[in-house]
Length: 208
Length: 226
Image (cartoon, rainbow over all chains, first blue to last red; front, side, top):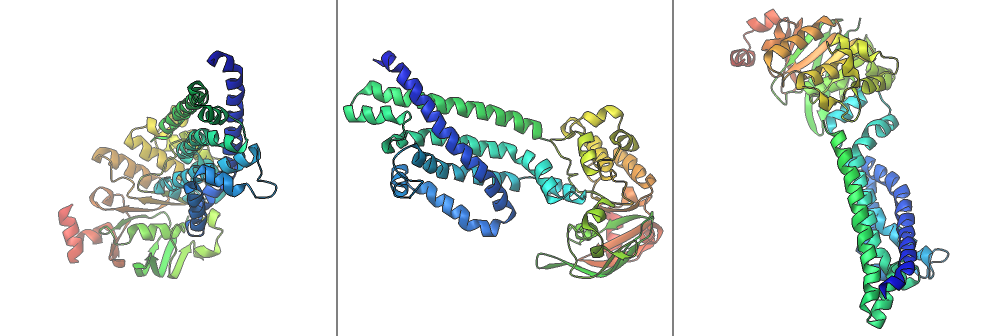
């Protein structure tokens, strides 16, 4: 049974990865500048952080439902799934960027300012490189949670490994459940390990 | 040649009045030992020069020119600054951070000035001992050849022989130097001027000899303790 499903599992896994990659990639593109902004202007950034916190607390099925009627972006299919996963991925990326930047030591920051470097140079040459392990940790969390959440996306016809789960649940067929759950878990563990390894190497090279 | 001057300067740290109506001058090429108990305003005073902190009132002059009339980045490049924890960039080699401070600097020559041999240029701060890190921080502060040098407790963590070496080195650079310290004894022989702050006010300013002979109770207690 399982071996005959293999080509389908592979195709669904790639679909799943594409959903996760696209949504987390977009979240990173927006989340990084938002995180920098939140670090530089903590007070005006508070409502934004609150908003992305609230998004995080919405159960994924409910979020899909809420986004469904939105014109252009909503509607059944992968586009809506990417939008929802993107919104979920924002929180860890924005937070970890802001936190990582805030953790850069005061004396390093003062030394950079006292050198007469501009804020842009300090951000590029000093703050972002030193915040990189934290930013990467946020990215890792975003990826791993997106892999899990993306299984729910099958409910709105976005494809991915969740398709097996819904079919398995409907037919009470265990092998179908495994066909969805095991590749998703493997994917999450593997990517988690890879990112942890990079983070570890990076932190070690950044310690005094 | 650069002289620094404070005229009736007050400064706040948050809502706290950290410096009160301070007037003091730091002649060209002088080596000033800035003393006082913790919380007396030493670091606040030091950070006024490169505008890491701002005054609330009074005038701060750099070569007789009010510092707020100067270009901020040029002002900062004219003042070498070594913060208490040195602030070395852990992710950059010594040469890289010296060149970041000034793209026309010669890292090897600057490191030679603080007696670090050329191979150190390609090392990271974590590969250096505590004393070598201090030297590296001084070399980096000198990258843009600033006429003034500010050192915030820069030598406090070092063992005595090493501290003497570095003090002699800094004194020999001939820059207008201000060094803050909790412990005056080791730096006293290199200083040309001693300034003592207490609760944000100028308690004493004079030569090291005058400092040693002063009858002010707080200074006496300080001398006896060290």
